[in-house]
Image (cartoon, rainbow, N blue to C red; front, side, top):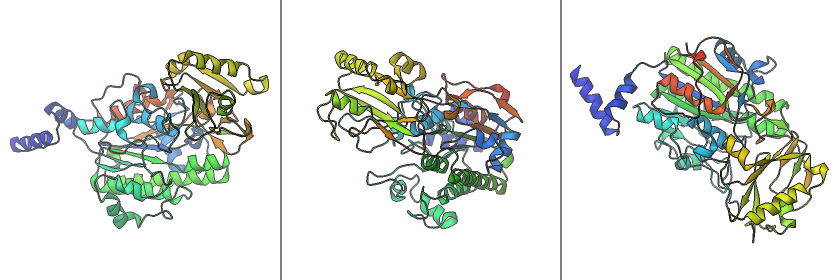
Length: 452
């Protein structure tokens, strides 16, 4: 017995772990494995309404804990939302404010890819610190994260969707090739493509393979099909039905892998998302107002600019070249106030005080939040008000359609619990509880009613 403890202690020190962390990792926890699944564009009605082809989700919702709606962050877009899930903090604290950062000299196409940009500890950090292992597949802002088996969401500026940039960022090297050999088949732009539902199958197979083979304590994965097709077709398009079926099938693959490995009774599943969806018909381009006022130029680098709107999903956030330029800010406010009534009624101005309350980008001096059906565009020329189609998100999260969902099922989760309201920040403490993690989550609330 002594020799085994001594050997584990040596391993802990070789990993940079403290004895206290090792002891905590050995304490009993409600679950040995947690599968944290994000369904991009996940709506509660996918599991609350039987018309949607999602038998696994609906069974887990019925048997486990479920929320009637989860309030997200502002803007309600993918990257800040996922970082809130993985940290339990709002964007103002974790530092991922949009999908793509505001770049003063013009948008290059870069997104917030690298985990070093996250300003607070993550669940991955906590798992590593407590002597456990993790895996992740296509999770936003996970490049270089402290994850044992990691295929991060990443693409080159040459274009979205290529598999090779992700392969270059994988951990450990050769992980994707190993999965291709053993379960996936060769991945390329045809066999792993967000325009087709086969991508959901592949991600489910990745997670299932690693769970069965290496048995990490935490797996995080990001499924995108429901988001993609709601953008294309709106909330109820025919491919949206097929996409939620494909997502449900991917989750089933992971459940079967846990069953084959003999660990299903020790595994908990958390299914959540980043935002809901709204059907749109028109878009507004607020930067055209700034160009007409001489506050920026119709150029890719914004030219000689003083103010610019950074659009993120449906909303727009005002940035000043000089953060202390009160004169320009007053000019923009006057411009907005003097707009004709038929345009002003399409959105509201979110003041800095309200942005602070909801934990939005501290660098924005104000934001524009549209009504449902309207979206903001980054265009700097043409008509201010244009036709639009499909669906989008990014709205201020104060209405039902933009809410996302939450299901917890399996080890450590009480049966048939309904949570009427919760926030996206409240997902992380569920993982903390299930794995007994030593991470502080001061912005989050854990609801003990879900405990088994």
